[in-house]
Length: 392
Image 1 (cartoon, rainbow, N blue to C red):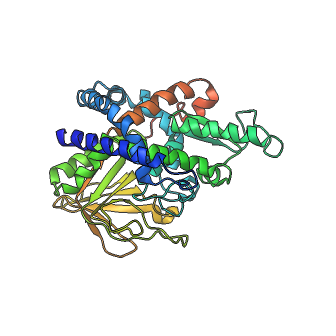
Image 2: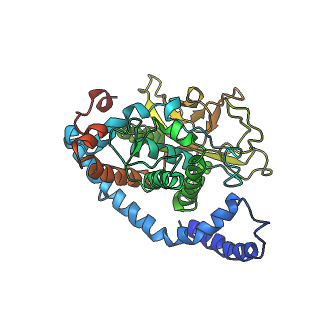
Image 3: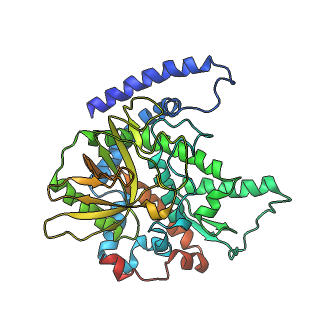
């Protein structure tokens, strides 16, 4: 950890110089920021949050955090589990076109917001899961919300739905009237860029942090069967609580990959690449990819197993379903469907402190869902925890 702290200090000193240099440029010269620009601006906050990271780790390690409390309640009596707030959204857990973003983690799709150099897979993945967990789409406006008229009160209409988006990225549940699903909502020409801006801000928060740095340590790891089985149990326990955990995968050497579906050119970055030859290729010394896990196999006789992830680099849900296999020696394998060659990973881990985000969502949903019977019905609080989830 000492080395990580020194890295932060070095980067922070660099950011001061860089911000001074940037300030000398005219507005005409600075239109679309690069990811490096945004990283440098986010470093002071990241350094400030270092003590909070270690304090959170301490509470998590000793089961004193809110997630630990919820987990003990769930284990004691699943039918009184706080995680029941997720039961109303079970259909959103498996990749499908309705619940898939209409854009992907690519330089092309984000070109009007930021110049991608590393990709924003972590933020697209977290952003999509936040919509799944927190947004109740209400096409008939059964909640009877007072929605401004699009044609006659456009500014009020935009403000109304932007506040909904703000709430989701603040981990607060919302009802979204007159839209059927996340794909339709995020496809709206007046809302999509606002969602993307939130995703870029979320990428800064997730990656310009100790959680972000820790992911890069996985590149140096070697396959470990004990770590693989520990991951299996960690993922299994979370799937049984009714939600998709998020993992990061690391590979010591990258390779080019194009997304299926739309013919987009250029598409220089699909994963969070580092150490690339230049900014226009997806070749790098290593890559890191962040995804939701939605399914887990039972261990096979030879000790191997598989889990399935929601790949936000793909345009269509049909191609977003990826099977990651664990070989008997503990090596995880990523299926490269474009090149046709499976690639060994150096590490797969739960995303650092993802439990903190999930616990916050549970707390906020308990309050929102419990406010009235209609919300309770939408959230699934009136339902029992299905055995197929508990016993998967």
